[in-house]
Image (cartoon, rainbow, N blue to C red):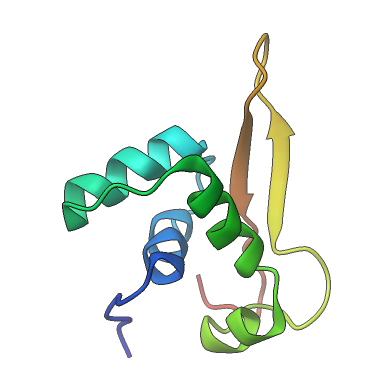
Length: 92
């Protein structure tokens, strides 16, 4: 069953499900391009945090335990990149 996005959490999950590293700004641009809506960095940060919560793990078929989002500091920057970790049970 294909996910039809209807929330920012859905859009963040869909972007990040490709397994690539994403910054807030890259997510922001992709979501704005596809939805014509602008979301600020704090809102996108909250959506990334939501992917770690139980209700999102169930909704997106993510592993029930362990980390599902990896974070790494950008070189020579104050920012971070985030990656949705692929697990056997999450089907991404």
